[in-house]
Image (cartoon, rainbow, N blue to C red):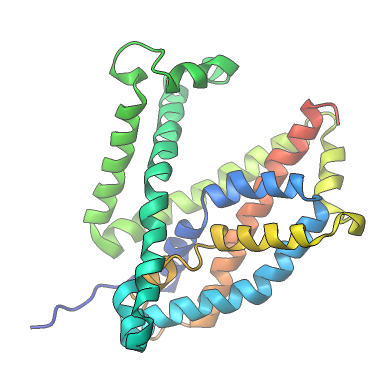
Amino acid sequence: MKRERSSFSNRVGFVLAAAGSAVGLGNIWRFPYLAAKYGGGIFLLVYLILAVTFGFALMITEISIGRKTGLSCIEAYRTLHPKFGFLGWLASLVPIIITPYYCVIGGWVVKYFFEFLRGHAALAAEDTFFTSFISVGESGILGNPLFWFILYVLLNVAVVLFGVEKGIEKASRIMMPLLVVLSVGVAIFSLTIPGAMEGLKYYLLPDFKDFSTTTVLAAMGQLFYSMSLAMGIMITYGSYMKKEDNLEKSVSQIEIFDTAIAFIAGLMIIPAVVAFSGG
């Protein structure tokens, strides 16, 4: 007997879960770094153009493949055409490669959150704290990065074991809105720092003298990384999407959510860096 495949409860749940996959290190860490490195406003402009054209087309294609076949990435490509089954294997290698370092950094985040909860926020903000932590400079299990790595992995395993609707979707419904609130709050604080307006101008106003092929390539690479494209991820999420949900509207909302978080991350980091570095 064929087992019935579970699905997200509705379009909102799917959008939040898929956006939760797309939003991550690529948005909050890598996007501001590349924007600052490759011209600020001109990088932002190129990225936005690529996102609403190439990025939208590729994302809607991948989610469509997943929803049509209702299969994993490997089987989806093979079902469409046997000759392209190898693409599924190639795409599946990417999550296998990136998962370990995501879990390492996720462990760091849980550690810092723990320090914040026990009132050590000022200590955790010191330059030497991170170096001491990753070199196991603290005593006891709470000072061991491996403990936080394992804890983060177990938390993810617990969410996955609860399934698509009760696990991934429910977690996304809580954590994604929380991420937006925190990001906006930090961005507002960053913009109030004396000297931050110079950084804001650099970030928002494009200077076409900084435009180059490298800018386009950097923005394109960021697009794939940030939106989880060509990794089999969106195909997998699409396979759990209900057939009656509006595909185009869902993809539009995922892109808006993902790009908005990346943009806000730039507001959090670039003005603050410019302010603290004296311009």
